[in-house]
Amino acid sequence: MKSGLRLSSKLRGRAAAFGLLPFAVYVLLFLAVPTLIAIGTGFFDKSGTLTLGTVAALGDPVVLTTFYNSFWLSALTAVVGAVVGAIVCYALLGARPDGALRTTIDSLSGVLAQFGGVMLAFAFVATIGIQGMVTLYLRDTFGLNIFENGVWLYSTPGLILPYIYFQVPLMIITFMPALQALKPQWAEANATLGGTTASYWLRIAFPVLAPSFIGSLLLLFANAFSSYATAAALVSQGSQIVPLQIRAALTSETILGRENLAGALALGMIVVMAIVMVAYSALQSRAARWQQ
Amino acid sequence: MSGGLTTGGVAHAPSRTVRTVILGLIGVIFAVPIVAMVEFTLRAGLVGGYNVDRWVALFQSGFTGVYRPVLIALGNSVALAVGTVTIVLLLLVPTMLLVHIRFPQLRRTLEFICILPITIPAIVLVVGLAPVYAIVARLLGSGVWTLAFAYGITVLPFAYRAIQSNLDGVDVKTLTEAARTLGAGWGSVLLRILVPNLRRGILAGAFIAVAVVLGEFTIASLLNRVNLQTALVVVSKVDPYTAVILSLLALAFAFVLLLLIGRLGAPRTRTPRRRTTVKGPA
Image (tube, rainbow over the protein chains, first blue to last red):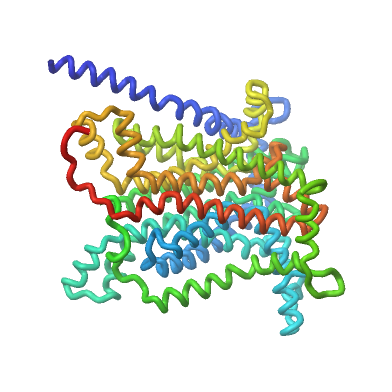
């Protein structure tokens, strides 16, 4: 009886393992293989021989500047997005999760965070472009020319506002579940022990939420760092951030007189992203401790 | 317990006034670009003033002629969204449940794989996808729908997060064991116990998947496929006003779509059905 049970559970275990196969094959074909190809090309020159020359291009001042631009743009918009998004989440705390307010804001956030891309570029051209609504309003009403020192919308500083515009909704989507997982019992315990609202937030909620908050912040950073569509539609000249540099490397044969630069840039990008995401994963497992 | 975190019991929620002030202020700021888009489409030309000529012209032409490609592109994008959600439902959800129930030791591995696409930006992935799609095109044809395979990967982190956070809140193991003890087969455990309990997470996952696919530009553009976003960029070069009108329509369409998908799950969650007693055979 006992051995029979063990055998059948072993068999079933094997059958269950087969259940993992379709997903494994899918991920292998469409995630692992493309990634290896993308990174691998950076290590080969055009004739197919192994070289470190292309990877060395990452030390080029032009490439370093692009990475620096991408870095501060992502960091700035992630911090602003995370703070503003967290405030919105806080405001939504009392709203019924299935009420009209939450459903509307959830849908709006979904649209703006994941749907924007190209269309956000159009929106900001219509807002703060040379003939944009806000530009004209400021000029006609206050005599203020926002482009006094040149048109900045179509270069890196111009990306800040559109990026914040999709970072805040992403924060709402990712941070709201953590805020909602705060247990009423903790507030009760706090009240029973004579704590105030301030002590609840400072001593209980903030420490519990901190890993989730920083985790979401890192996710926002990664989101901005890898974002391509808005920048591609807005910035037509030059390649000030890494994704645009990759576009340039993909569409033209040589940049900085080097071949396969796209692969090297891709490698550099993946290294930055990997560091961020390892930290994110560590924080996530900390956050999960309080969400059981 | 699954529906226990709703309403009433939220501690230290802000007062109605505070909530209104915060949401009002941020709402107004976020409305500005959308209002600007509307204003832009209503401009009557160089002389100033406003009219609705451009909207009328677009609708009177019935999306024929110049605008027809956009309609086809929208069809492509919707088909891709359906395909991607299918991949999430048929590949990701069963795998997550299987790992959760039978192979808990693989949980970190699965999480790592699912979060990985965030680490690998679409712009990087597309470099490696080009050769893969050369083979895919030979096997399955070069139809636009094949892009759904790539989009399934793009969507993975978002869908995973949504479903996993729901999975963490439901005691899957106890539910499964209870159902199995009462004689349920794996099929009914999956469809009658787990899927209903994980409805919110799965819906949220589908929710984000649809939005991601409808807004996707990078992969389609660099693999030379036509979807909604690439079509909009083409139109914007010829006629920026029409591109903005179409963008507004697309944004509104996506909003309504997400609202509908969100609502799908809502009515059933609202009924306070308590099944504390499970008696008799299933």
